Image 1 (tube, one colour):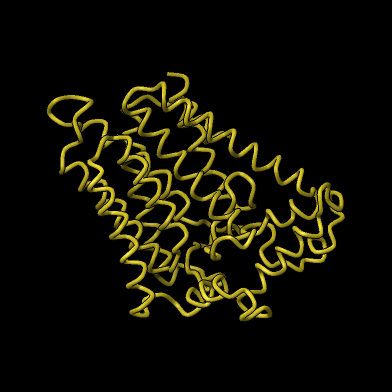
Image 2 (spheres, helix red, strand yellow):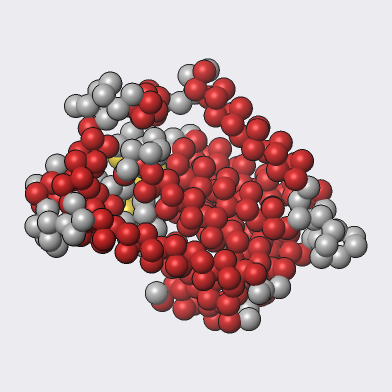
Length: 314
């Protein structure tokens, strides 16, 4: 909340400095996790170990600073005919280059889920900026082709391929890579309509679902608070996105791009997380914004909320 308040108070010159320094620090952090300084958890080398037992995940901060950088860049470089003209080609290439560098470093960890989230956020910003639809279609097709090529050429790690296999055939390895999703579905299913009660869920309190406090937090919500509690959490999340989208509709060019980027970032990440908890999407290892445990994710999300509050105020 302090982080949100700080960015809420910043004026545009300070935001420019924050975007540049934050993006640069994120790149350095993503490089650091690939060095001996990085820590591997569950097959992904994405954390830096800090003194006092804390860890830092640079990927979470890369999301918000990439969005902020893209919004600033495209708002300052609209076409020659003004706001209704598509942004300059060099501005679009600059944004794609900045986002592409982050995604490339994420794929080396590998962190496919965060790369997808950043891609969705940048596409949303480009769409609102007025980039020609043909280019957006080319980017979507190119991204899909790159994902298929990575699978066919064996670029993806074995555990990532196994996750997709488990998604396509949930019964293929129920005691191995499919264990998380199977246990999450059981936990959510046993919650029924009203749940087993807070701190009374058998699967939750028995720690049957791995990573239940982070990536699979929604399974705990479903078991202990039931369908009603799950719908409440989803409703609050959708309400947050709706308010941010409303702010974007009534903002200037920079505010519209920034709020749209935050909406696409949080919305894509939330959709990914809920989808993998419900067995509707492959497991990608992204937290549920503002709900999952994890300091890096929570602080980055609050920075995003602070930026949207700034847009709404103006």
